[in-house]
Length: 200
Image 1 (cartoon, rainbow, N blue to C red):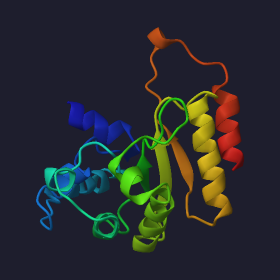
Image 2 (image 1 turned 90 degrees about the horizontal axis):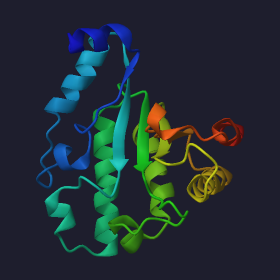
Image 3 (image 1 turned 135 degrees about the vertical axis):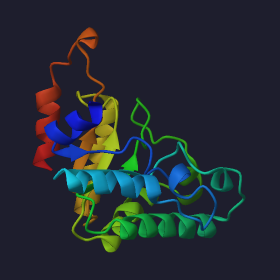
Image 4 (image 1 turned 90 degrees about the vertical axis):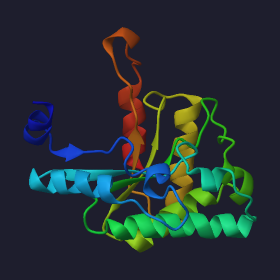
């Protein structure tokens, strides 16, 4: 029943886990595309677009990556290869990609991650450039939570996007990962926040 409703009532689908690095490349150099390919095939059979989630994140990384010891140059090459391989595999089949996911803390500072520590903040721009090279037609997004209203975090994301756009980095939008529910109330400045992002 659930599968029928998803196929019948939704125009897009987003994978929860099957496109995350931990599941896609559990062993270095060995890709497991089956579950993600299945999701894409299901979407195509039901006339749905697919939003890819996610290429660069600090969570759900394979243990060979998190427990390995890599120089900065090696890690940069690994990240470049991962983005290129995954986006190329799905080239022409993914409508939008969440390229970088949850890179900021709630106070607006960049999150202390493997990527920031070894590659510096430039890894974000590089990720977008590499994704665009692998599939120039896919729309590319930065995605984060707690950025639906005007807060230090959403302002930091806004400033990041403004800077990336000024540098000519190919970024097409921001995913406002709102975990909405009536029990949480609703921040009144959501429209103003969305408007300022739209104007970028």
